[in-house]
Structures are given as structure tokens and as C-alpha cells.
Image (tube, rainbow, N blue to C red):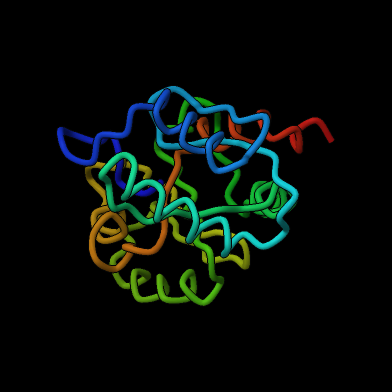
Length: 174
């Protein structure tokens, strides 16, 4: 989920989110802390159908309108494996991965390249966009723009959270 549980707006209790997903028929639902992330199993193979179903249920049952991004475990693992920016563990909180439902949405982030201040780096890939905020995410103009209108259809996770989600999905074992 994009932009939930940040500040006082768009509060989504993870227990409610998990129950909602289970009520929609998803199995093996696991949420990660208070992050707006869930890993689940489904027989459905089309992430866009899950996206629409979850977004509608989120608005109706929890009263929150938020962008929903759904990735298959293979797609998520591919995004992690494609990371072009090696980041030391102590900088995992300064390294963001932006996920989108549609690769064309990621290409739209190219406009942010003009805001990059080296040693900051932004790389747009097929499965995700990768942003290393060397001075920290609060100091990055790229990050601020990504959290605003330019990035309204993407959701970002820091590298530590991304690796935890990879592990939860079972794809990280390979």
C-alpha cells in the first residue's frame, strides 16, 4: 500500500488489513510490522486483478483510498536481483526501491533524473526504480518528488524492508 501509516492520515491497522485480505480469499497472509505490506498466496495469476480487488476492499472496509501495488513473488525477486546499486548494510535506510504495477509508470520517473545530486543515484529498471539517497531520504529532492505527485502510482520501500519482504515471500531462499 502506498502512503499508509505515515503520520496521522491513512491509518490501516495491520490486523484489519490481514483480516480483509483473508476475507477476500487470500491464503497464508502475513503482514510486516506497521508498514502497509502483506505477503499472501493466491491461485489468481494476474496482479492487476488483485490490485483492483484489494483497493476496492480497502476503501469499503477500512475507509482508506491508497494506491495498491501487487507483485508476484517471482517479479519481486527479479526486482531485488536486478538491483544495480550495491549499498552497504549501514545505508539500507537510505536506499529506496520503487515498485509499480506497470513498467511504463516506472519510466515516468525518468523526469526525476534532473533532480539527482551526486553521489545520489537513481536507476530506472524493468521491475523497479532504485534510489540511493547518500545524504539521507529527508535531504533528497528526488525522494520528495517521488513521494509527491510524480510518484503517485508507485510505492517505495527501503532496502531493509524490501529484503524482509523477499524473505517472507519465500523467493529469497533461492
